[in-house]
Length: 418
Image 1 (cartoon, one colour):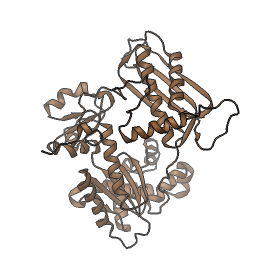
Image 2: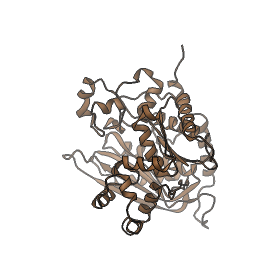
Image 3: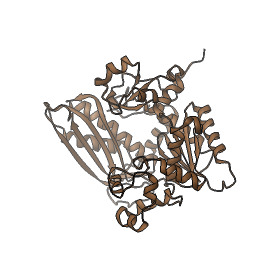
């Protein structure tokens, strides 16, 4: 059996977990630089606040309807997500983190379990330990567990947040209920092709001929069909080492001076190097990009990039930062107001197993230095130790005028009990 555990309105629930006065009030969370609405509570949805709404256009609407608006607090959301996933690992060792707010679980050897009770145990423990409400869908396959989760979320009073598809009758009833566009794995292109065949519900899709599905929808479409039929073909994804690592951000303000841009690029390169070391990889190439604000049509537009090839693979922050800064200096154009930049490291190889060079090698002092920096940052505070060309006060410069406290990741923001 598989389960899909999904956190309800995750970003809004994280804010409510530490501020109970927000419960039952409409909440909206904004994107980077306080741009658009990226998450809404059920109360905000009921008021018809659209997803992706630019906040400068909907500011008065939010005030009139008393919608609480917050900047994205990613350190808080990431930490709360980690806590939820750690709790799920107590119920089964086979957990696939699907996104920041949902995970698939596989139950091997749980033949005699009462899965509805087990789902309730998961839900109650997460709620008690983190304050995050969840919906749990359990079924014989991953695709069906997604369907079960939607039912649990749609009918909370009937299901109590947990729904189990454990019979053929429930499977057919569920597939006849869910619309085709709401089925996991069916995008817009596939919807059009299936609707042309007369499919409106998920059940209609399962009635198509297997040969036609294989021929017209590829092996992935066939696996999804079988999963919906109750025959498990989509397995848990194994954790793979990334083939490229990227750090890209929009700036808080537009920058037209090279010094500010070099500082940003150095910070992005440092982040990439830290991620490389975390997964035990080194890079052969560094890709640096820089672009102006495309929304300001009257301003001069410029978008450029540069690839730097290294003669030996490295995970050193010093080397990656130095090469990235040199690259952005070459593509920078004076007089242009830049809004976004990024660093991507690729050509990844295992740090402990790559082709050695006879003459061109990395400074042997870098490895122990990087190890020490990572250890100190992990012990005291992330990004406590930085390069001299980085801003010592800020890592990500974004407009966050409505930011809530980082309750779980910053000692200065921890809740004080009186």
